[in-house]
Image (cartoon, rainbow, N blue to C red; front, side, top):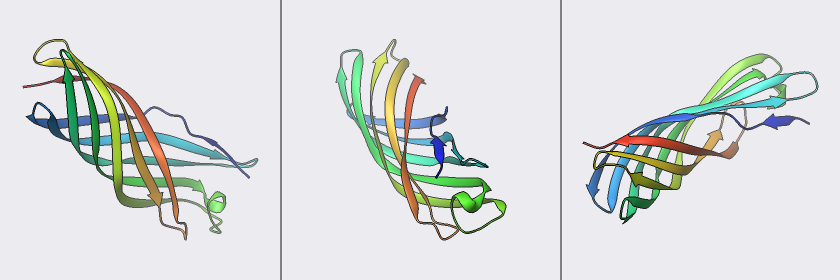
Length: 151
């Protein structure tokens, strides 16, 4: 058996366009951090990075707003380390797999001025790995606090 350390820091860089007061689109680059898999004798790791594109529904309430987003993400999953943890391959190696899946999120924002706002959001990404004879999928959650400048 193995144990898994699934908590790490991630980040994203986002750009977007507000089409109308209740709808926006955005694209993001995301780095979802690293997970570590431990057995009694070895450790392997998994990292995920990629891009995401969303449509966002916005419900403004004075200076506050609530939003929900749905779209797609293309994530590159990289497994590194001794592969017996994951498959019958016995050597230490690095393998990658890139997959595109549905992703979504919810959040809230506050406008300090017409141009400057802050937001808190939760997003869920579906990651997959389809190499080394594996067909493994999982979800990765990203909770973020961000600042936004609007032109």
